[in-house]
Length: 397
Ligand SMILES: Cc1ncc(COP(=O)(O)O)c(C=O)c1O
Image (cartoon, rainbow, N blue to C red; front, side, top):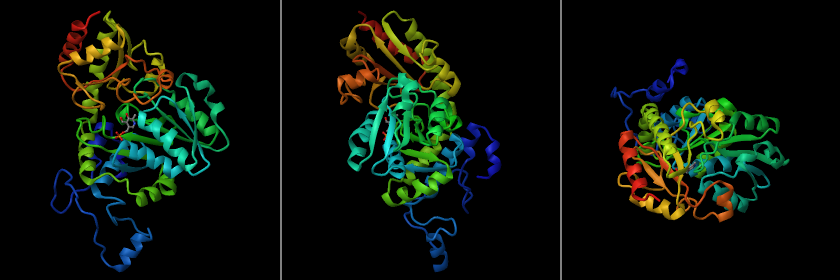
């Protein structure tokens, strides 16, 4: 894609950041299912391996479909370089293993996806990398957790599943002052809703499995950063440890990005509508959605998010028994641990994604026993509400 495309808007970039067509003049990128690439002669082979000239060498390093997906993600996040991985956890692991070594320290916001929590608290310490958790409500005191060997500050905003927010600009000020890498998991927002780099993030990671795929079909992830961070850190680790996404999944996810804006416009509008209807219902104890006036960090949401996203959390009156009865009474909304699908999904974190956390750990990240997380899909909003409402009515207390 030519650099003049930098002036184009999100939807156009999501479609036209594409591999130039081949001799066949195809109008949609085909799938490249090959492991190796031909070298013109020995001299070219040698120059490629010495990185004196650009070009494809071997599919563990790169592939046309993977490169298209990476370049599209760079265009949509406003970042210079990317590496696409087989899963979102693969992306987070690649970033940590590229930037950290034994003796280093991470400051991480405690409100994290379960596997990120396991990685930071159980896996990285095995390699001599320590961590300090900070609380999302206590941002004014995060600076106290920084030590001379702190290298990375890591967070999610909105957080999974609590939908708590962190002021990215504020944290970027802190990380710049202390010369730390500021790394953000942007999975819950997607590049359409929020671009952390605009507010000072150095590294952005995604689980592309979620909203980017958008239809519950493929696993994928991506790490994004500056060209310099990529060349000095990510490239070496990515090439030699083999976390690259498959060409098929990269092709699928690149195609999915073409519809991200239209899908999310509808999903965000429906989510706000569902959140409003839940808030008015007297069977509902709590609703959280970034673009609801009642969200404790509503001003932060308006500052850094374009829309509120497609996730809504709520608690019904009647405790955990009622929560279970409600979930089991839903007829169209499906019970899964996934999110960001075209289908509306519900998750009960206490019983599933966050079941392995100790009760005190769950309490510190605002996960009550009855908290429910809705991932609003692309169905007609009235049909989504009808299903939610019939489950509220049939379990009324
Ligand atoms: C916020 C967040 N980050 C990372 C991941 C991990 O992504 P994946 O399942 O693609 O490895 C998830 C998965 O749910 C997530 O919700």
